[in-house]
Every structure is written in C-alpha cells, then in structure tokens.
Figure 1 (cartoon, protein in one colour):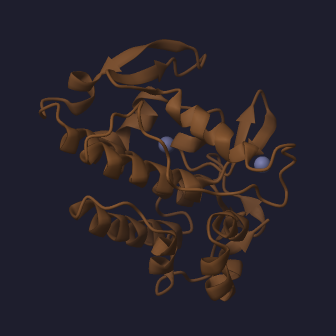
Figure 2 (tube, rainbow, N blue to C red):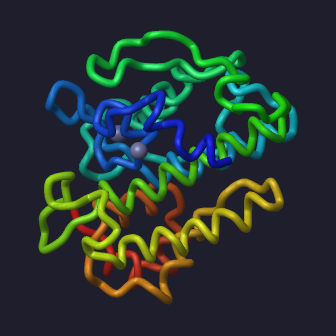
Length: 238
Ligand SMILES: [Zn+2]
Ligand SMILES: [Zn+2]
C-alpha cells in the first residue's frame, strides 16, 4: 500500500497534467484548464478499482461503478464528459502488466513499470495489486488537502507551502483523519463511500477551504450533499 501511495509522484508526476493522480481541482494542459477534475471522484474511483482488483478484475478490465455528473462551472458539451475524460486519463496509465510511466519534465511516456518493480519484493497477486491502488487512492485524497486548498481566498501553491505540514496545519490533520477513514475500508478490502468526507467534521477548524468541494460532492451524490451541505459549504470555495 505504501508503494502505491508513493507511486503517482514517482511514475506519473505533474499534478496539473495528471490531476486525477494528485487530487488537483482542475485538469490543466499547457496552462489552460481543460476540465474540472473531481478529486473526490478520483479518490472513490481508485478505491473502487482496488476493491474490484482484489476480487480478480484486471486493472485494464476495470469498469468503474462510481458515477458522477458535470459540475455547474464546466462547459462540457456532453453531460458527464469531464468525468469520462477523467476515467480515460486514469485508464490510459493502466496496463495489466504494470503502470505507464511519464518523464517528469516532458510528460512523455517513457516505459511501462512492471508489477514486480511496482510491488518491490511483494508477491504479484490480486490482493497486493489491490493494496497498491488503495495506496494510490490515499495519495489522491491527501494530495487534495495539499494542492486544492485555499487560504484567504488564494490557492495554496507550492511557493506558499502547499507541501509543508506546518503551513495551515489543519489541512494535515484533516488529511490524517481522512486516511484513517480510508484505512477502515482498506482493512476490509471495501470500496470507498461518498460519506467518507464526514470523518473530518470533528477536526475541521475553518482555517482553509477546498476548491469546488460542494460541487464535486453534489456531482456524485445529491442526496448526501443535501443532508450535509451546511458542513460542506463551510469548507467549499468556488
Ligand atoms: Zn502527488
Ligand atoms: Zn463536464
């Protein structure tokens, strides 16, 4: 699982061009927002994929069961197009034999990292591959607290300390709580749940906001949003 949690930064870096792997709020190519990247959907997608892989589904053969719509801001001509773009972006990196790697600087595909390389000494079986992608799910959601968070209305970028746990430390606390919630699912080889964000309610202190969170949650479950909008709208920033 730890290998999978570190893998996006090692093999598929670039939080903007690979938003799905790094919890980034928008998919940005060549400096332009291509679509709104629903990091909460990406978390649930990886959780669900991991759960399926443990049951014997292959990474390339996984057909997502998590559904989501577009958010109000998006300009997709076909409804749900941004979600299908996200799925395509994720699936394009998956091979049954391993993971498609990119050059850190150019973003060009370099090679396929084999499962034996990715799992580093752990046996190549369904449960270890599942744990790898559960780790990736944790990477995605914890990165969202690093990269898609705002302080005083401004997104916390790398220059202002996005990756520093000491900068607006409640981000780290919330990421920690979320990870604990995800681990409860992982111990049972379960999929994630749209309600998982509720786990930060007891610790969220209002010191930061998360980009488009309300829209992203609403796009996945209107019912859950409607029952929890007071809390979600308190964290949200558009
Ligand atoms: Zn990352
Ligand atoms: Zn869209």
